[in-house]
Image (cartoon, rainbow, N blue to C red; front, side, top):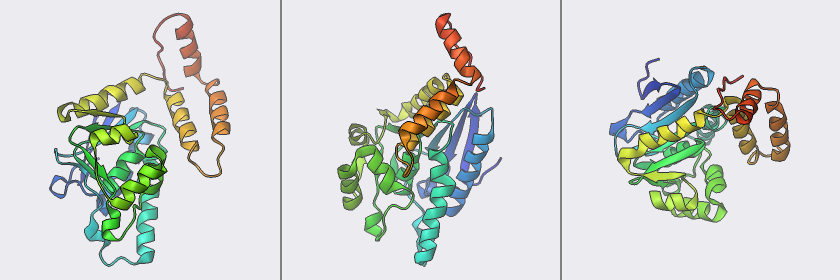
Length: 260
């Protein structure tokens, strides 16, 4: 499918989604969010896609934030709708995907851009990346899950510091706080994301999805994460991949998982 603001390319089982608004530092306008919803929904349903890498076009920015021009003149009801639709249609869609989604963060990841990266399961940053949630400088707060996911990743104190000061952090500071999983030179960013995605995709697909659901349950209100883990663990025993994995282990060979 052709998109106006996204570039998509599939190599083997990895789908690459590049947010392609370089002149706007890849800011997330309404159309880009709609296209992300369509691209990710299609990838989740496509059996040939095992995992997704999301990045931004150019060297300056992953995503420099939401397109603030679209916020002008919006009232309280409209602002609530922007946040609710964005979270449901894009950010929660990514976080709850049973297929691993990795953010390759190049350059600035600010506001909605950092929220997009945080919704992904794993974040790889280039050494020139800078991240932050500057919404309070506009009289706003993060609205795409930023207050929740940043707290989960770096803890309450650091999350409040970043949100209330609106200060950016460097890639190394993000690594130290647990905001990103790895930092590499910019020229190696996609290669590192590909390497990690390929390693993940060598594992059992149904087990990967079960693991994501179980980890997500830890941060879901009203859900007992331990019970989720127990249930998901038990269900793995009914899969052909489990039988293949055990047989491969016992016979000292590489498993051939089929996602069944």
